[in-house]
Amino acid sequence: MIVATQMVGFISAFALIMIGIFSEDYMTQHVFWSYVFFIFNLIVLILANISLMTHPRFRKTAVYYGLIAALINMLFVAVSNTPLLEWFTVFSALAYVALLSYNTLKFQS
Image 1 (cartoon, rainbow, N blue to C red):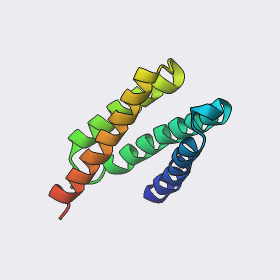
Image 2: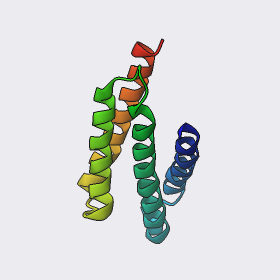
Image 3: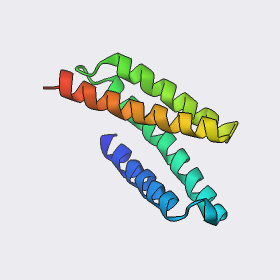
């Protein structure tokens, strides 16, 4: 499951690079790569949470926050694509990465 998460994460990271290459001056390409990024980011959030739910030394609070971040991302993809919700989605995903990093540093060693 972790390998699948990493592979999907690679696609998500590539899409993020493409968003940077195609700025809003190239709106069609920018929107396409934004959708690719957010869809694959959602899949990464779900797969990472599934992988870590059963890990005995992983704090479940991080998993619960990851589920909330996935729901926020799903709300953005499915319902509304306003810039405010877009940035809220990005920051919630980044906060999840920070929480995963903290959890790994503090509780896995």
